[in-house]
Image (cartoon, rainbow, N blue to C red):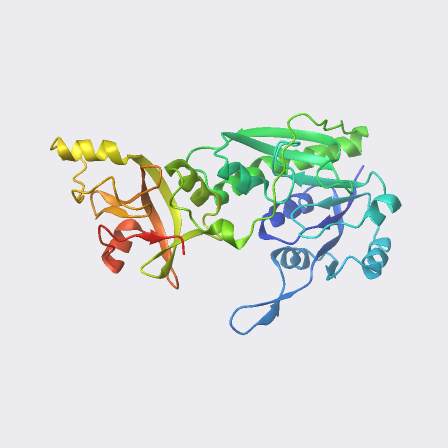
Length: 336
């Protein structure tokens, strides 16, 4: 049996899953996506990546501005067995679950019921989680509470960021989605209840979440940087200029480096002032090609800033940043 699919998606993350279905035995009969938005300096209307992929594949596209009567009318005219919702960006109205019950699938980038809500990948990275996964679940009106068709789990490595985590979800989630569709088509496969054990919720990310709090621990700051890299990018202010930090690592603590300096061990060759250990959080305690760009956190931890992006510039490694912007030992990254 070939399933007819109405696909709902709007972001770049959604495109690989749409292409996966297009390349399968199943048929995408229509794509529903957000309406064109103004972009760039000229503020010209431009399609989102999902619309571009659908048009290229010759699939009919419905642009949605609001979930109103026009949307219900358009959907009523589409021949579909299942609606698949992946990074759509809008909440489906309850009416569709009454009119087309049991015909909705979602790919959620977590092991439900953990990390329900709008920011599961960011939240896993912020938590420093060692594992996450992908869930194919039934869509119901109460978000992310539907029955589960299938799940797969994978590791989050210490150097994973938001981009690499998305790639892992795509890598594992695409085949899982097709397996579920094939099982539904061939065997009438049914989902199983989620249950309420281990439920956690995420929230919508806001602009303030991107601002680095230098008074935190080194681990928390590095996790925040990972969670928003490479876009939109966590940031701080140095000499009044906004600087995105796209990669960083924890390097130890101030007392350990101070002892090493006092003992005359120069294996790290760190140019520190005698007052090391008493600087405010966010202070640069080393700046050089060999020792790197080291910043003290409020906890006494030291982090190494490895990839930075000043406002209006491209991302650069710490050596290029030091050569171009000359950050001095004693200068301080501010929260505002």
